[in-house]
Length: 299
Ligand code: SF4
Ligand code: SF4
Image (tube, rainbow, N blue to C red; front, side, top):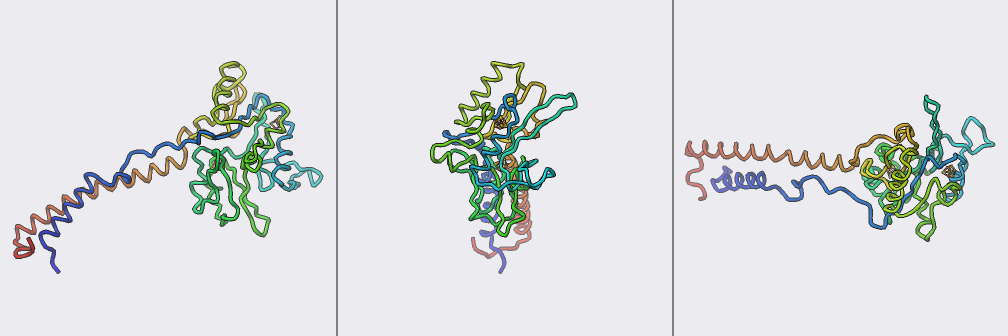
């Protein structure tokens, strides 16, 4: 069946209209930046206060029913993990600089404002839960481990040695927080090197410490905007940048925001080809008409 003049014109008009206006959702500008809920909670770790006693590591294990990690070179007598692993959700590390300076460093899930782990999890086994805590539902997890690849802080660990493996990561002791308690690490710390509270209060507290003792601190609150913001905030000692403590320089955009905005930009890039097809379509129609084709068709 040969095309009618009306159908050709309709096709050209549709393509031109789509090129000109687009769908409001598809062609909108950058997506709005994700923020934490107003009642978000978090942790503030002040490396200048930490004495490396590991009380937080021990109490984290107790509160979360984690088995001991006796696989270190020190042998089975010691539960002394070297890093986060499938039995360890919270760890204290020691940084030693070439200049002889040292600092302790607490590592756990950062509870990102816009978490990459949740963004890539196709069945929402990892998700942004109440009060902004990034939670995990083992009943949904299929073990694809995309979250491990996506996390910029290398946090999620996998239980390779169990029959029904799960992802393991800090959930900010949400089972305690939901009942009005606080995370075990913050409860255990004898120095208040790690404290728990409302995210906005913690941000203000951290900035207040920087302003009050500028010679004591590296002049930045890590997590305020890094990687789109995290609900675990850090202060480091003067002269020890956060990269030295293993906290990467991520810029201010979250990974999911970058990839989602890129997808939108690519989609927006379809406007030019559509417009080109509309112009070409019109040229074909004119040539088609000048050759007398389509005469006698539907008007
Ligand atoms: S630190 Fe990693 S595991 Fe934790 S919320 Fe962010 S992306 Fe997810
Ligand atoms: S309990 Fe406090 S002082 Fe002790 S290692 Fe943990 S954060 Fe540091």
